[in-house]
Image 1 (cartoon, rainbow, N blue to C red):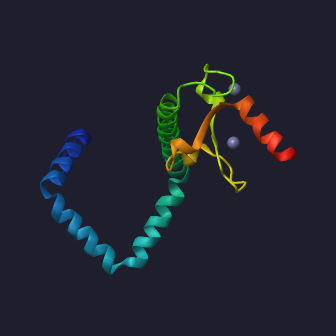
Image 2: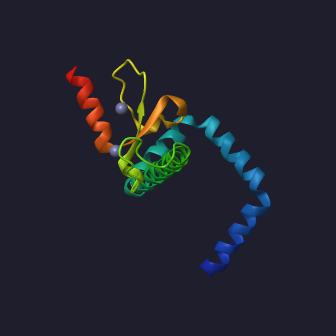
Amino acid sequence: MPYKDPQKEHERSLRYYAEHREKIKERARKWRAENLERAKERCRRYYYNHRDEILAYQRKRRKHYAFLQRKRIEELKSKYIKEKGGKCEICGYNDCIAALCFHHLNRESKEKEHESQLNDFDLSKVQLLCLNCHAEIHYRASQK
Ligand SMILES: [Zn+2]
Ligand SMILES: [Zn+2]
């Protein structure tokens, strides 16, 4: 029986849900299957009424994934930099990993050397350079 006290009623419904979770889920699944159009309509209405919250949540989630991705790349990059001696192979610069990069040797194509490609990486075929030395190498190559 529902309680008059909203707090008690809330606790009761939580308890009820915990005890009957499978049955409730099953009933909801069945209702959805039999009332597909209404279910879709409810979903649309829910989206319409909670649009800002939903979009904010999605934005937050996207930002979080981007953060994880950046962190993963950064860790991988640090690891490779360490393995390649930790400094620019031409001038010895070693201050900031953001200013160090991997120059691909023997690469014919004009493919961009992008950090998101750190995954398939053959360390023996790259040179660790600072951005200045890297830019110079590419500039000279383009002048030939
Ligand atoms: Zn390069
Ligand atoms: Zn350098």
